[in-house]
Image (tube, rainbow, N blue to C red):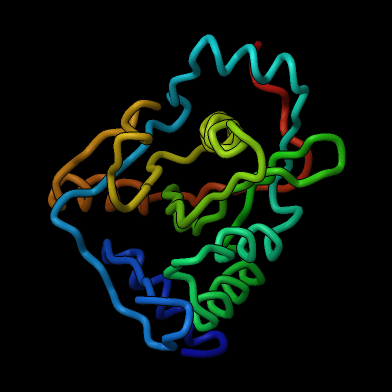
Length: 204
């Protein structure tokens, strides 16, 4: 896949309820996944613990949308084992240029310390990966993203596979059938805009 046709093909894949992954960084091939159970997070409803509120008050971190997309993808891929290969990097970059891939970075001053990136289509946001260079920075990114998606009018926040960490933040596990019903609803009507720039602080 390459060029504009690749962007359209990849968006069709997400619209069908599937997502691409590589087996490793060294393999150029991509595989499509359609798990029987899907993980989702509540838009605007991610749980913030008291301890996390204290962290945010103490650290004074801030967040920005779509300011360091390539760097955040690079950090997410910089692991001993990763499913983000060069083929996917190129596709994500093409989606970003087309306005369908986005990032949210968490900053301590001017230092990027964590982030998350994903793909948007209609009112659905498909979270792909996140990273953290400091304890709690990735969790802060999810909290900022939760509030941001709600402000921007998103309805579905797909996390692909459920896991205990996401469940502790309010994540749900739903069936493939339920997921596709929610996806169809999120793809109807006017698309949401992810936006860019500094995000409002989270409530203390």
